[in-house]
Image (cartoon, rainbow over all chains, first blue to last red; front, side):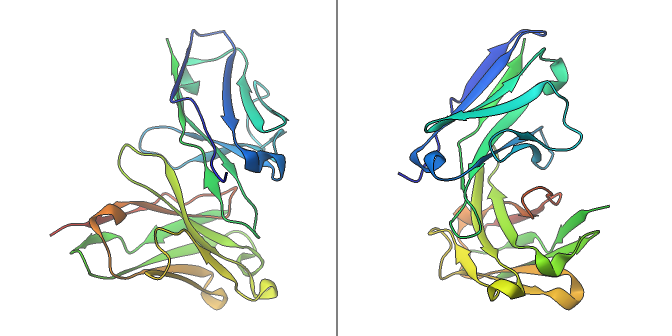
Length: 107
Length: 114
Protein backbone atom coordinates (compact mmCIF):
# COMPACT_ATOMS: atom_id res chain seq x y z
CA UNK A 1 0.00 0.00 0.00
CA UNK A 2 1.11 3.57 -0.62
CA UNK A 3 1.08 4.65 2.99
CA UNK A 4 3.74 5.39 5.57
CA UNK A 5 3.07 4.62 9.21
CA UNK A 6 4.68 6.42 12.15
CA UNK A 7 3.98 6.20 15.86
CA UNK A 8 2.24 9.39 17.00
CA UNK A 9 4.67 10.08 19.82
CA UNK A 10 8.04 9.17 21.30
CA UNK A 11 9.41 10.39 24.62
CA UNK A 12 13.00 10.38 25.80
CA UNK A 13 15.09 12.05 28.48
CA UNK A 14 17.91 14.43 27.58
CA UNK A 15 21.09 12.55 26.71
CA UNK A 16 19.26 9.39 25.69
CA UNK A 17 18.79 7.99 22.19
CA UNK A 18 15.53 8.50 20.33
CA UNK A 19 14.47 6.17 17.54
CA UNK A 20 11.62 7.18 15.28
CA UNK A 21 10.38 4.62 12.77
CA UNK A 22 8.44 4.83 9.54
CA UNK A 23 7.01 1.78 7.80
CA UNK A 24 5.46 1.15 4.41
CA UNK A 25 5.71 -1.03 1.34
CA UNK A 26 6.89 1.92 -0.75
CA UNK A 27 10.13 2.02 1.28
CA UNK A 28 11.23 -1.15 -0.45
CA UNK A 29 11.29 0.77 -3.72
CA UNK A 30 12.11 4.37 -2.86
CA UNK A 31 14.44 6.27 -0.60
CA UNK A 32 13.07 8.08 2.43
CA UNK A 33 13.70 11.56 3.78
CA UNK A 34 13.20 12.83 7.32
CA UNK A 35 12.00 16.30 8.21
CA UNK A 36 11.99 18.13 11.51
CA UNK A 37 9.24 20.65 12.16
CA UNK A 38 9.08 22.92 15.17
CA UNK A 39 5.90 24.83 16.10
CA UNK A 40 5.11 27.67 13.73
CA UNK A 41 8.00 26.79 11.40
CA UNK A 42 8.34 25.14 8.03
CA UNK A 43 9.72 21.60 7.88
CA UNK A 44 13.49 21.26 7.60
CA UNK A 45 15.28 18.40 5.90
CA UNK A 46 17.34 16.31 8.29
CA UNK A 47 18.07 13.05 6.44
CA UNK A 48 17.72 12.29 2.74
CA UNK A 49 18.08 9.12 0.70
CA UNK A 50 17.57 7.00 3.82
CA UNK A 51 20.84 7.82 5.55
CA UNK A 52 22.50 10.96 4.18
CA UNK A 53 22.71 13.83 6.62
CA UNK A 54 21.71 17.20 5.15
CA UNK A 55 24.44 19.87 5.44
CA UNK A 56 24.36 21.62 8.77
CA UNK A 57 22.59 18.79 10.57
CA UNK A 58 24.45 17.55 13.66
CA UNK A 59 26.09 14.14 13.53
CA UNK A 60 23.74 13.10 16.34
CA UNK A 61 21.12 12.57 13.63
CA UNK A 62 21.36 9.42 11.53
CA UNK A 63 19.10 7.35 9.33
CA UNK A 64 18.90 3.72 8.29
CA UNK A 65 16.55 1.45 6.40
CA UNK A 66 15.88 -2.25 6.69
CA UNK A 67 13.27 -3.81 4.47
CA UNK A 68 10.10 -1.73 4.63
CA UNK A 69 11.08 0.27 7.71
CA UNK A 70 13.22 3.37 7.88
CA UNK A 71 14.51 4.71 11.19
CA UNK A 72 15.64 8.14 12.30
CA UNK A 73 18.02 7.90 15.25
CA UNK A 74 18.86 10.90 17.39
CA UNK A 75 21.75 10.27 19.77
CA UNK A 76 22.42 12.31 22.91
CA UNK A 77 19.06 14.03 22.60
CA UNK A 78 18.89 17.71 23.49
CA UNK A 79 15.83 19.67 24.55
CA UNK A 80 16.11 21.59 21.26
CA UNK A 81 15.41 18.35 19.38
CA UNK A 82 11.82 18.40 20.62
CA UNK A 83 9.75 18.66 17.45
CA UNK A 84 7.51 16.79 15.04
CA UNK A 85 9.32 14.47 12.67
CA UNK A 86 7.94 13.35 9.32
CA UNK A 87 9.17 10.72 6.90
CA UNK A 88 8.65 11.20 3.18
CA UNK A 89 8.99 8.82 0.29
CA UNK A 90 8.46 9.27 -3.41
CA UNK A 91 10.35 10.61 -6.35
CA UNK A 92 9.74 12.77 -9.39
CA UNK A 93 7.98 9.94 -11.19
CA UNK A 94 5.68 8.98 -8.34
CA UNK A 95 3.50 10.92 -5.91
CA UNK A 96 5.05 11.86 -2.63
CA UNK A 97 3.67 10.33 0.52
CA UNK A 98 4.31 11.54 4.05
CA UNK A 99 4.09 9.60 7.24
CA UNK A 100 1.61 10.87 9.79
CA UNK A 101 4.35 12.41 11.90
CA UNK A 102 5.89 11.61 15.27
CA UNK A 103 5.96 14.10 18.10
CA UNK A 104 9.27 13.79 19.95
CA UNK A 105 9.01 14.92 23.54
CA UNK A 106 12.18 15.48 25.53
CA UNK A 107 11.23 15.09 29.16
CA UNK B 1 21.12 31.91 -0.38
CA UNK B 2 18.57 29.41 -1.61
CA UNK B 3 15.13 30.76 -0.81
CA UNK B 4 11.45 30.13 -1.54
CA UNK B 5 8.81 32.70 -0.67
CA UNK B 6 5.10 31.94 -0.95
CA UNK B 7 2.40 34.56 -1.26
CA UNK B 8 -1.24 34.90 -2.21
CA UNK B 9 -2.94 33.25 0.74
CA UNK B 10 -6.04 34.65 2.34
CA UNK B 11 -9.69 34.16 3.21
CA UNK B 12 -11.98 32.83 0.49
CA UNK B 13 -15.53 31.54 0.49
CA UNK B 14 -16.35 27.91 -0.32
CA UNK B 15 -16.52 27.47 -4.06
CA UNK B 16 -14.14 30.34 -4.64
CA UNK B 17 -10.69 30.52 -6.20
CA UNK B 18 -7.24 31.61 -5.12
CA UNK B 19 -3.82 31.62 -6.79
CA UNK B 20 -0.68 31.14 -4.76
CA UNK B 21 2.80 32.10 -5.91
CA UNK B 22 6.20 30.74 -4.96
CA UNK B 23 9.15 32.97 -5.78
CA UNK B 24 12.52 31.22 -5.92
CA UNK B 25 16.02 32.62 -5.64
CA UNK B 26 19.56 31.39 -5.13
CA UNK B 27 19.41 28.35 -7.40
CA UNK B 28 18.66 27.32 -10.97
CA UNK B 29 14.88 27.33 -10.73
CA UNK B 30 14.33 26.22 -14.31
CA UNK B 31 16.04 22.90 -13.68
CA UNK B 32 14.13 22.01 -10.53
CA UNK B 33 10.87 20.19 -10.01
CA UNK B 34 8.68 22.14 -7.60
CA UNK B 35 6.14 20.71 -5.21
CA UNK B 36 3.29 22.09 -3.13
CA UNK B 37 2.58 20.62 0.29
CA UNK B 38 -0.12 21.69 2.72
CA UNK B 39 -0.73 21.34 6.43
CA UNK B 40 -4.04 21.86 8.17
CA UNK B 41 -3.85 23.27 11.65
CA UNK B 42 -2.65 20.62 14.09
CA UNK B 43 -2.38 18.02 11.34
CA UNK B 44 0.37 16.39 9.33
CA UNK B 45 1.91 17.21 5.98
CA UNK B 46 -0.04 16.44 2.82
CA UNK B 47 1.47 16.45 -0.65
CA UNK B 48 -0.65 18.51 -3.05
CA UNK B 49 1.20 18.13 -6.33
CA UNK B 50 4.25 18.97 -8.40
CA UNK B 51 5.48 20.34 -11.67
CA UNK B 52 8.65 19.11 -13.32
CA UNK B 53 11.12 21.11 -15.35
CA UNK B 54 10.99 22.04 -19.02
CA UNK B 55 13.37 19.15 -19.73
CA UNK B 56 10.65 16.88 -18.34
CA UNK B 57 7.89 18.57 -20.31
CA UNK B 58 6.57 20.52 -17.33
CA UNK B 59 4.76 17.34 -16.29
CA UNK B 60 2.32 17.77 -13.44
CA UNK B 61 0.87 15.35 -10.92
CA UNK B 62 -1.69 15.89 -8.18
CA UNK B 63 -3.02 14.29 -5.04
CA UNK B 64 -6.42 12.67 -5.47
CA UNK B 65 -7.93 15.16 -3.02
CA UNK B 66 -7.22 18.14 -5.31
CA UNK B 67 -7.12 16.61 -8.79
CA UNK B 68 -9.42 18.45 -11.16
CA UNK B 69 -9.63 21.50 -8.88
CA UNK B 70 -6.01 22.62 -8.49
CA UNK B 71 -3.51 23.43 -11.23
CA UNK B 72 0.23 23.90 -10.83
CA UNK B 73 2.16 26.01 -13.32
CA UNK B 74 5.47 27.82 -13.52
CA UNK B 75 7.13 30.77 -15.21
CA UNK B 76 10.84 30.08 -15.43
CA UNK B 77 11.49 33.63 -16.67
CA UNK B 78 10.18 34.87 -13.31
CA UNK B 79 11.59 32.02 -11.21
CA UNK B 80 8.08 31.48 -9.90
CA UNK B 81 5.76 28.54 -9.43
CA UNK B 82 2.01 28.87 -9.02
CA UNK B 83 -0.85 26.95 -7.47
CA UNK B 84 -4.26 27.82 -8.90
CA UNK B 85 -6.98 26.60 -6.58
CA UNK B 86 -10.58 26.45 -7.79
CA UNK B 87 -13.80 25.11 -6.29
CA UNK B 88 -12.30 25.51 -2.84
CA UNK B 89 -13.72 23.54 0.06
CA UNK B 90 -13.50 24.14 3.79
CA UNK B 91 -11.18 21.14 4.03
CA UNK B 92 -8.66 22.96 1.82
CA UNK B 93 -7.95 25.31 4.75
CA UNK B 94 -4.26 24.93 5.52
CA UNK B 95 -0.81 26.43 5.36
CA UNK B 96 0.53 25.86 1.86
CA UNK B 97 4.24 25.36 1.33
CA UNK B 98 6.24 25.19 -1.86
CA UNK B 99 9.35 23.07 -1.76
CA UNK B 100 12.19 21.76 -3.84
CA UNK B 101 12.38 18.89 -1.36
CA UNK B 102 15.51 20.12 0.41
CA UNK B 103 14.36 23.73 0.73
CA UNK B 104 10.95 24.94 1.88
CA UNK B 105 9.25 28.29 1.91
CA UNK B 106 7.75 29.74 5.05
CA UNK B 107 4.22 28.94 3.89
CA UNK B 108 1.12 30.98 3.15
CA UNK B 109 -2.21 30.49 4.91
CA UNK B 110 -5.40 29.72 3.04
CA UNK B 111 -8.69 29.85 4.91
CA UNK B 112 -11.85 28.67 3.20
CA UNK B 113 -14.86 29.83 5.16
CA UNK B 114 -18.16 31.57 4.71
